[in-house]
Image (cartoon, rainbow, N blue to C red; front, top):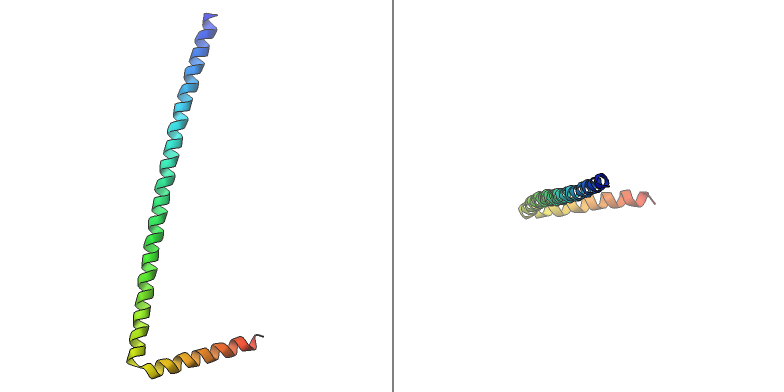
Length: 92
């Protein structure tokens, strides 16, 4: 009988150790997930900032070109709009 009690206590200790190990693993997974989420957010933020900088640069170049030669810019915009309109009108 003492043997089975010792085995039972050993089994109880093993189950307790298994619970602790599982809790450590879960904590590690949570930390890893949080870290990867933070890294993904940072990457998205940097990409967004880069796209915004590029968009501002394109806008500034277009603005300078329009201010430099407004008549050509207006005529170019009209011609592009006319061509696109004709292409879209033919698709009906």
